[in-house]
Image (cartoon, rainbow, N blue to C red; front, top):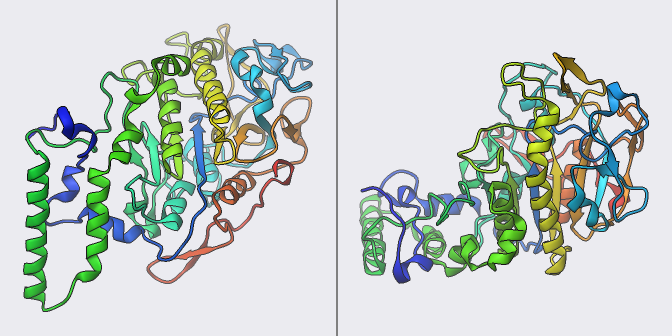
Amino acid sequence: MPLSPCTGPIRRREFLRLGTLALGGLGLDRLLAARVVAGRSEPDTSVILFWMWGGPSQFETYDPKPNAPDSIRGPFRPIPTAVPGMDICELFPLQAKVADKFSLVRSLHHEMSAHNDGSIELLTGKTPARPDPTSTALSDHPDFGMVASRVRGVRADGIPQYVGIPRQPFMTRPNYLGVAHTAFPTGDPSIAGFRPPNLSIAAGVDGKRLDDRRSLMGQFDGLRRTLDGQERADADPFRQAAFQMLTSPKVADAFDLSREDPRLRDRYGRHLWGQSCLLARRLAEAGSTVITIDALAPTLSDRYFSWDDHINTQTRWSLNDAMRYRAPFVDQALATLIEDVHARGLDRKVMIVAVGEFGRTPRLVNIEGLLGRDHWPFAQSALVSGGGLRMGQVVGATDRRGEYPADRPLTPKDLLATMYRHLGIDHHAEFRDVEGRPFPILAHGEPIRDLI
């Protein structure tokens, strides 16, 4: 039977991940059982990662070089912000107004020049075996959201620990942590009547039928116990937790954007980036640990493009066109998220990070009058907001060409260590695979002391 949205009183009470409740296969209760870390207390903190897939140019975002030659500085000019001396690209006027509520890290660097390898470096803190500019590899290690899911374990209220809006980063895999720790993908929250695809109940399944299904599953469990001659009481708490996730009003409310003031939704922007940021704030407020925003265009029906600002001579699309098209959506969404988190007093609980997998070449490429920049992992910028950290400052600097760090060189591992610190996760801790081999969460990197 095809899935259709619920109406009436069932809408807010009964979310059903129908596929995982099928009799046979891997049940939701077993997935939840795999996620529990018994007896662990956890801080009430979250990270929202605004993932700038494709590699944003440092020059056209957070590290402009107005005094560099035209061949380096690019088509845009810097503008002053609310923090004296912290200039950013002119295309980000709304972020400029809230600069006292974020800090910039301008001296990140690594050596991975391929999109997937750079993403693995940024998201997992594990360096791929060798730099390969054509690599399409997938990770051998879990990303920081998967690690956080494993460490935090299942929530009794059913709120998912790791959420990907509208999707999870595609190049990372949970591997030795298990599939239970992949991000829950939401789909496009900007569409009318948005509801996550796997949090819908089959048409005609009302509360009584859900209870009947629960009873039926209990009878099957009893039959298995009889046939096995073994007690399976250890599964009962996870079965209860599964139904808590499915029926919890808190889970329903967290994903229900219609509960927000329409004026606030307008402030965020009624597009994919805006509504993704609003949903991320709701989920962080509700208790999700890691929320990634991996959005490629203002709506999923629009043309897909990333921050990969090469030159396309066929479409006549250039860095200038891409940034002018993209920037208003990003500026509106990210500035409103930062302001909203602070206005709600969530700036100690929620840490916001905006970063991509690498930066862009100092020298502009000019083909047939079109401008672009190629991949450049040796210098990139990140925006950090909230998390109880020191705001309104610039950490590190690149040289006059924006080519390499000139002051306070930092790595993605240091940024990840800062995020783990906020989440209360010991980044020196180890996991073991099925063969017993140890894998540290981070083999290198320390929290950025300038922000603490």
